[in-house]
Image 1: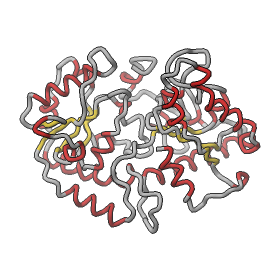
Image 2: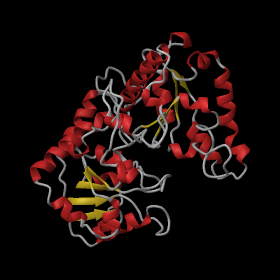
Image 3: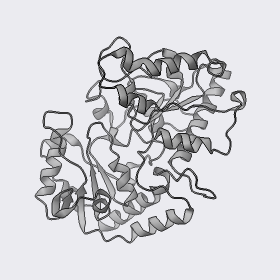
Image 4: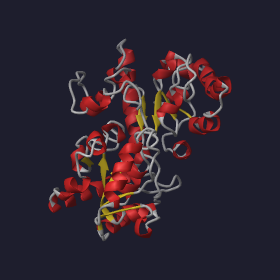
Length: 371
C-alpha cells in the first residue's frame, strides 16, 4: 500500500515542491516495510530506531512546526497495531505513533485502524486489479454481473489454531461450510484459486484472522460477491471513507458470538434473504469496485475515482477543517483520541459535533484492547 500510494503521489497533478504552498505534506516513509524487518527483534532500540529517527527529523522541520504536523500525512501499509507500542512497554510493535504526543497530530493511513485513535484511518487492501482505463473498469463490472454463481456461500481462508485469537470463529464457519452442499471453500471440490472461488458464490464469509480485517474483503467485492462480516470492526468501523454507512446495502452482518456459540446457521440466515434483495446488494457491491481498488499508477485519461483518489480527497478535507480550527484557536473534533473516536466518521455529518449510543457499542466496548 505504501508503495502504491507513493507512486500515485509522485504523479499527482497538484504536486508541489514548495511545502509552504501545499495543502498536505506527504511523508514518503515505508513504515510497514521497516516494521516487517524488525517486529520479531527483541531489541526494542533496534525495533524503534528508524521510525524514531524519522519523527525526530520531521519534528525539527519548519514544515512540521508551521501547523504542528496537523497537515502531515503518512501511509503505514500495515495495521495500526504494529505502530502503537507504548514507549515504556516491551510488547508488540514499534513506537512510530506513540513516540511523542505531537506525532498524533499527523494523519496515518493503514490497512487496519484502531477504533480508539482519532488520527488513523483504514484504506482498502490492494487487490488483484489495477486498471489503466475506464473501459477496463466497466468491462470488469459487466463481467462480474454475468458471473454464474453456483454456490450460495463460500469461505476463502484457512483455519486458525483454536487457542489463538479468532480460531473458534473460523472453525465454526469451516465446519458449517463443510457440512453444506451449497457452500464451497479452499480445498473443497478442487477449489484452490481464491478469486475463482469468490466469483462463483453469492456470499463470501469474512471472519477475523490475524487482525480484524482481511484482504479477502476487497477480493470479494472485486469478484462481485456480497461480504458477510462477523464483527463490525472488520469493515464498518474501518473503511468509513470507502464503504457506505448503510452496511446493510452491500453486506450481511452475523454476530461472531452467535456463530461461535452455535446459535445460528449461516446458511439459514442467507437463504432467508429474498432473491430480489440479493440482486440489489450484489449490484451495490459491483458499483463499489472502482472506489476500493487502485488503478495503475501510470494510467492516464481515466475519470473514475479509485481508493487513492477517495482517500486523498478525505485527507485534504480533513486538513482543511483542521486549518480552519487552528485559525480559530481550537482543535477540530475529529482529532480526538479515546473510546468514542470511531464514531466521528461513522455517525457525524459536517458541522455536527455530538455523538451518542450506537448499535455497535456492545462489540467495541466488550474489550478495552484488540482481542
